[in-house]
Image (cartoon, rainbow, N blue to C red):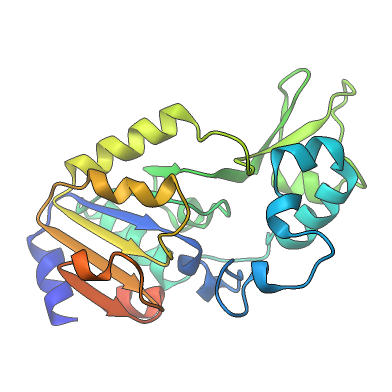
Length: 236
């Protein structure tokens, strides 16, 4: 922690790159850990149910799973989200790049957030492009349709879909401009998101994760533990 504090103190352009492990302390399960979402038993795998093809071919089943597992509207920002918002407010954090779709970084007060996999908080009619909130989608029954009759699709990147180009470009620019990159709560096994770390050219690469990752040996500092517990000890 002393080394992490020293790194934060001298940094002026920190970028935070986070995954599902950032939100587990808010009660949202991750995906690939022993008790994660992808280890639960379903007749069809979550990867299939969260795919582009499944959305259009089994739309009713998609939304049943989506409302049940992907809309934790009760969740509140934890210590990690709050500390990052504080670092940004103090002018030390340049951006947050996240693989999460829960919107908790913004709820905590972060402004410059690149959501690589989209967000549950924006849902768009495929016909007229009217947008709906996550709360509206949660309240609708069955397959959500717009007033115009069009199908409403969550603005999340499903399996088989490409990442948004503007979001990718913004995230890459931020990481390339950082003097410190903090990678946290991610297994670094999901591509293309995991490949973003390769754009870092700064001084200190810090990894915070519960379990070892393929990046551990390349980092300047590795801390194994809960992201919120570790970040909350940083003094700004």
